[in-house]
Amino acid sequence: MRLLPEPICNKERCIALLAKASSKSLLRPLHALFETSGLLQSDKFLASELIRAFANSFSDPFIDHARLLLHRLPDPSTACYNHVIRGYARLCPNPRRRDSIRLFIDMRRRIGPSSTPNELTFPFVLNAAAGLGDLNLGRQLHAEALKAGVGDVVYVGNGLIFLYSKCGQLACARQMFDGMPSRSLVSWNSVLSAYAEKSSVDELLRLFSDMRYSQIEPDETSFVVLLSSAAEISNLGLGKWVHGRLIVLPIPMNVQLGTALVDMYAKSGAIHCARKVFARMTNRNVWTWSAMIVGLAQHGLAIEALHLFDAMKMTSIEPNDVTYLGVLAACSHCGLVDDARCFFREMTKDFGIPARMEHYSAMVDVLGRKGHVKEAYAFVKSMPVEPDAVVWRTLLSTCSLHSAADTAGVAGIARQRLLELEPERTSNHVMVANMCAEAGLWEAAAKMRKRMRKRGLKKVPGESSIVVGSSVVSFISGDDTHKSHDQLQQLLHTLCLNARIEACCSLFDDSPFQE
Image (tube, rainbow, N blue to C red):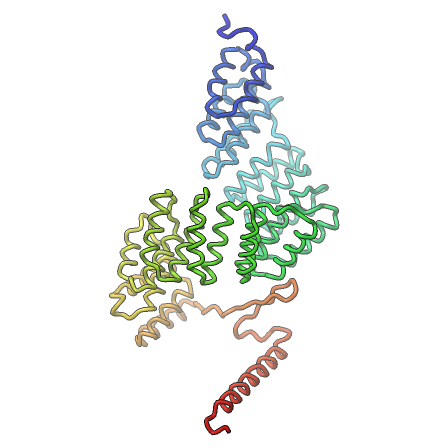
């Protein structure tokens, strides 16, 4: 005996109801409706659509419900498996991504006429493996894709490029890209992103040129990748060139592009250009505001950064953890200890943003720079998580700004904890040796340098770089192997000589004996 009126008990009506479900809360009642209709067990397409609706909810309980539905089916289709695998792969926590892999393994074990992995299955599990950073698993999935005969499918290839780049295997990602019989815009963007993460600017630009030559028009993602790469190495010339291409093509300026431009100009030293781009943007998100606030703070414009943060709070956009990093950095520049305390409390209590190690380090820097070394140490001891080496290094560096009487033994504790956590890091030993020497503790400084020699630790030479054309040229202290070394030395000698002449002329002009 049917519990529902006859007009509702048909496949078309059930699918229509599912399509019109505007809220996740309606899915469970619809599931009950389909169960009582008697169609769910007999109609694979209806079962697949219901599983898809639950799996696309981005909610753990609903995706688990989709998995439960999947296991209740006597012969689930490949589409049913794909929906649930994709749902788990898109969730951020690693245990959920592992559920995606487990489900793929279960699918392989239950292989049947209707549940064979296809070209739509592998992009999802490859994405999960990339999120886990599991290279061995990724290689096994690559082999499975080849055995399934879908290795040459373009979106499987895209997934493999993404996997290898996320696992740091740039050569494998490039080999995968070069071997693809056909490439999409996503393929090009994936390999561009891989080179951008490695800061390989020359190869990145060559690939971008090849992309245009292949009649593939770049999109917003392509330009965001280029701008991110320019920001990473502070290559203002490259960033301006990309900005010019955006104007020429023209490509509409959306929030992602605008944010990338603000970030690039701020990190490349052109904070005035970042201001102009920010001011002209009609739509901004939390990352846009954060990029501008952090940029201002890094350029020492702390008061302007804090004013901008106040303006942000007048909008409907809530700050995130990156925003507060910029705010705390601004407080450190200005020595605003009370404000930093308020902002830290506001972040954790009012907005419920969990503090990361960078926030704790920033607070230690604010307190220590202003002379509140004891309070900074108390703050470190009160941390709910074990402080890492960065926190102790920050505390130790702030101790070096004040006298031994002001630090009251905190420097010794920080020094000990830092060397315990990172005993092989050369810069830690150099910092400690220099602090001992500045305090007149010559014996302790000599002991630290002897310890470095005994462990084979060598001071990393200083390095600087400049942008020449589209290339980044690096110079290392004490290195005379550069092909233009002699010419550069001659030029520096000439500049120094001219500086001395200018200084002498200035002294002569200011002489009281001159008429």
